[in-house]
Length: 216
Image (cartoon, rainbow, N blue to C red; front, side, top):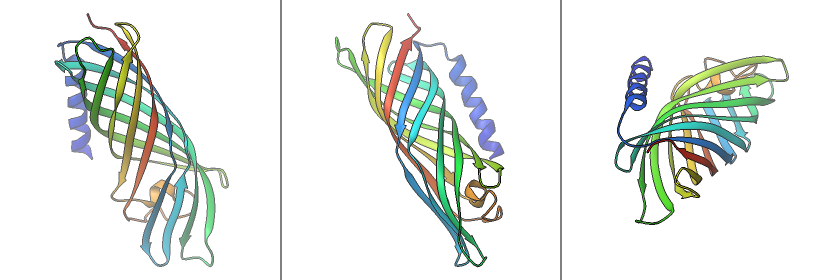
């Protein structure tokens, strides 16, 4: 994780100092759908639940590094809840409805394409970064957090109302990989923090936002 963070910081520096082409500011608003998750360490220790749907918002800055190709640094946040059932060797299952905040800091590459004279600009992109998950258990007022590797895909179109302002429509997939320490995510006050098993969160969303072009 340390090496990845160093690489991420280096890429951020490159993205924010690139001098070629246009600069864009993106304001995002997406509807994020439900997703189920589970983690079974052994027959006596597991948890399973579902992150609920919600509104994801954020901001991104894009720099054009060559014609039609952009590097984007973005921040996205989703506040939701996650009804979860877990069992850690006790006499019965335990239930908690966690309050969850997903924070993404992502660096991505976006490729745009358009026909000459058209006001519609298509795009597709890949991103990678970190997902920071904050969890509160309202049952016992305990909290926990975890930072994991995250990646994502997106695609859609920007409709330019003027030369400087556009409306973005997009579909997006974000994923936080829990390769180790899965219990930290949804174990607050219940499942063991030492539960080391594999569980991955996928968040599919539809939405878009506004695009402001700052270049010439």
